Length: 291
Image 1 (cartoon, rainbow, N blue to C red):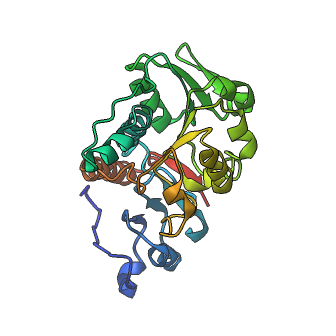
Image 2 (cartoon, rainbow, N blue to C red):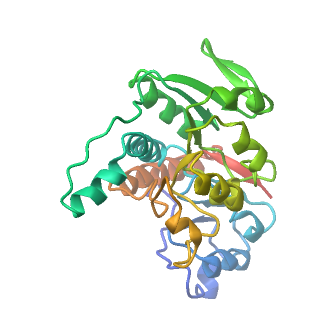
Image 3 (cartoon, one colour):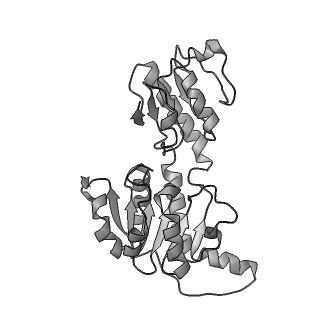
């Protein structure tokens, strides 16, 4: 700990002693924090900063008291989430889900599958995670199209604005979602969005489930026109009776993007950086909101 910093281990599920609560100015929220943990943030009168482990932060905003900065886990999950995005793309295109089922049946069933090479992939949400996804795709001889909120030039690499998506989707073999959940991205992938994707295209979502209109996606999967690979769903967790479980052409993983052995080490490094900056009176890194 930097000089002058007192560390208090708190599970967030019980109230802190009054004398401790009166002094807490920074809270590092655990990965498995529920609403009960977040709701207790308003009981800390000296709170100035909250550090969360995830890149997404929409679920925390309503729990923050006034005059608090919120910092997300940017940089902690970039590589792990990008790994999963690429794994889902390859598994779906090369039919690994079908082959695993065939293995269970002891069935030798080769067939020609789409290759990732020479395909066009549109990465929607070209931030830290989107950039990590794009770099990996380039190693597979993919034509990567980057899309962010607004158009820009990123060291000579063109980044398209979100308003250009209607013209970009018809040429996309793969669409990968890495956007944060905001008012503008909620339900962004609706029936019109999906209708613009060409027959046989693949949708991969490692962002948030509510970015996609589940009913609209189910309609496309049921006809077999599109395929999908989802690490996040709406609703989430996915109820056992939900029709997504039986949708053809779909691979599901249970929100595993950052659930790897690399996460704890990277999170510790980020917390150390934040404590050093705050103790020195500097602005913390990864500020995503101020109340």
